Length: 387
Image (cartoon, rainbow, N blue to C red; front, top):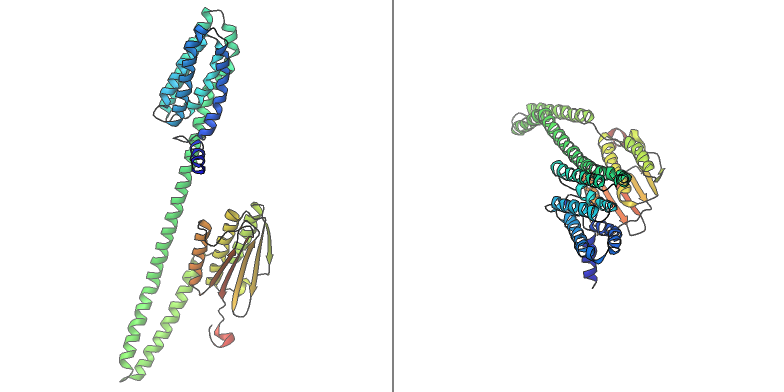
């Protein structure tokens, strides 16, 4: 029984082809068909035997037009014929049934079919105008002029709205593609610069190391000179790497902390920062790493947590940096899968490069706590060795 209810719920909430409202709203709109049915029920029986089958055909074609793109234009033409017949045979007020038709016209897939349908509407209006002149009911027809204008405008408004949605989707896809290509180009640029900058230097270090190994027994003095050359070359390589990293458009913790305050405020999430990061003590690599992790963490809070408060806690010890992001949102189970956990996986992979650690604690209804720990590297001038 529960399975049948689920299938029924899924069916009525299904959207028709080419977009549009769910089928449930389309069926709900059919309640207004009671007005022409009531008006027809007041007619003599000899008029009802033709009218009620046409009403049934009108409803069937309306549903078929919403469910099938192939039958939509034919459903519109059937509607126009039935509305014209009712207006001619019974009363001009039956033209209000055209609002059902206008919704179908707005869902037509291209301008050609919309043009055909609108031409049919104009032809129906022309027929009604001619019929009103011959029966001296032109004044009552003019009272329906706003309805006629609305029936012509509704399809174009729906088409423009649907077209705008398609264009927005295409724009988002284009922006995603531009972003992907930009990242790919940046990777290729970094690869070229690493190859051009370090390739020759590392090759020289390798050759001189091999030469020193061969000379160390019979020509120790010359081997020492080669080793000194290796040291000088390695220092030059280290300087080149630092210059390369400095030249990149890196993310910094200071910038991301400022961005986090703006983003959380825009999402109506109160932010509290505990502890002031010592930005000067961070190496460029650690600064970039922590900035990227903070960006991803704040993005997850805004997108997935539904929190009202976010606390960013910074602490620094002689051996490590510690960054904690807490929120009071809906939380999640660790077994859950989704974009947020994909972001956590990316942070962990990034932290692995610097022997960092990531700890994520969360449960349903109790918010989340994300702890990021990276080792603190100190120069030999302060300690005598590098940790």
